[in-house]
Image (cartoon, rainbow, N blue to C red):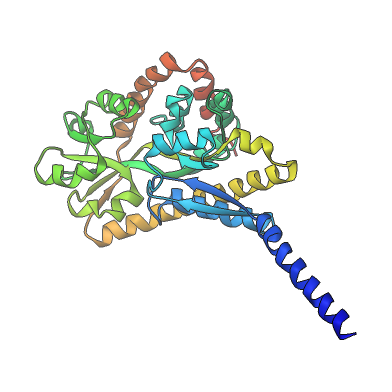
Length: 333
């Protein structure tokens, strides 16, 4: 009898040892890369996606987040996602190199508010922008979420149109941004964001533009205390997934990925808008000045934005349809 019990225990031990690797193999690791550091909306969105996917799948999927360009710069980790070296990534209009319409995610002076933009991004506008993208890129766009509206930060107040013309402003080295600056009468100075503080100290530039979260995180208001709420470009990023990997998933798993991405985006839309209000409080508490443009100033920016849209008409076949779609969500309830 003792021998039988010992044999059964030995068999149970062996079966358990064999089962352990099998159970561990059920967890699928998803790698997702991004460019922003921890604490930024993009990175929070990646973590949120991972949390929701794990919850929805009952632990089948575990997402490993690689922020702050730890897997290379944007073009490198986008290429890795396209090749299937990693499964996912987060980025913005960098994907316009693969599909020009993706640049229209950040069309100047297109959105009046976060609500307006969100309706467009959750509706037909987003679908029109993505039309043909997956076939060209091998990537699928799972969602769209904001990093924030870009606003001007300057040393001197911008009280009107004349104060804008001739300003030497730092701009990202992206045709969309440099062209919009030109249409505003601004002398755009393309340079990496890391060089902005020294350029301001040396008088090379008069200011720049960024979402309020960046202005506060880097305390730009200490160098350029005049913040003008132009909201001229809404920075929008997305989570992308390798299309071959996505299509290899069972239908239920695809639904989990889609739902996790939706929930993550929902959280970021709310978080960014609330974050803007807190950022304004922070700037004012530090003796910075937060100004709302006059109607004349705003209308001037709108017209400059519309002139910059020519870039889209020249490169995006359905640009007119996209712009009209976005406008249709302006008064939607």
